[in-house]
Figure 1 (cartoon, each protein chain N blue to C red):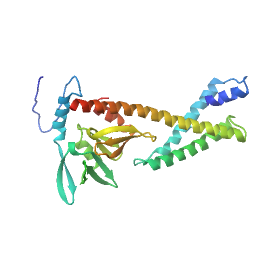
Figure 2 (tube, rainbow over the protein chains, first blue to last red):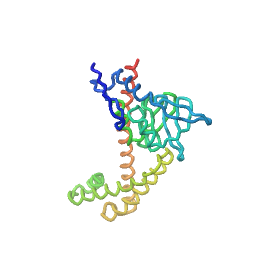
Figure 3 (tube, each protein chain N blue to C red):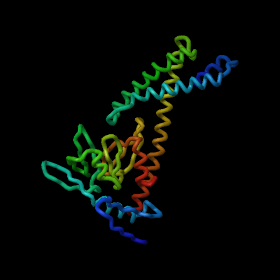
Figure 4 (cartoon, rainbow over the protein chains, first blue to last red):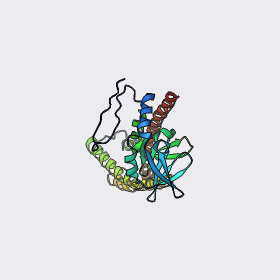
Length: 145
Length: 123
């Protein structure tokens, strides 16, 4: 496998481009995890700061103009707005799943349809979140469907 | 609309279908039906309860919009006819939701299959 590294100036955004025959190969997942999972975001709980890795986050939700980050068992406050967090999470397994939520596709156990034309995603910690039809295409793209 | 013609055919086998005007009316019915979908528009994600309320409202709106038009075009005339026509509108709405659910079930199945595959690969 050929490995190329290109030095860029500060004006350009750092990125990792993978050329592979199988987007679902294990090594692709590990590189993706390393490139995006190592990104951290500041989260707040009980007045103290907790830097969270993106890979720890189950979902990000905005409720009444307040942002929250949910991990497996805990809830943290977050100062980022939805579009700001979306920008931070670009390129990771986190995708916008509804008007007020960004979900980690790697934490989904399975999804099921509902009569309301949307989907219910059951996460690995047992929680259930709604995925709008509009954003299902992005989930399919992330999973390689 | 097609069912209306088939219903007429049952009672009057000599009925003919004026294709151009009939399908033109189908287009108008479709356009009005699509406009009534605006009842589902919302700034925030609808909860399940809100969705059911809006679905009931949508049905009322659909009946209120389509029944008078159908009457003006002579698709129904008297008391019993209106209930039959209203039932067809309700049936069409139910069918639409069922087909939609079926498509979503297929999508969910594809996604779940992929999630299972990815999990097996990671082991």
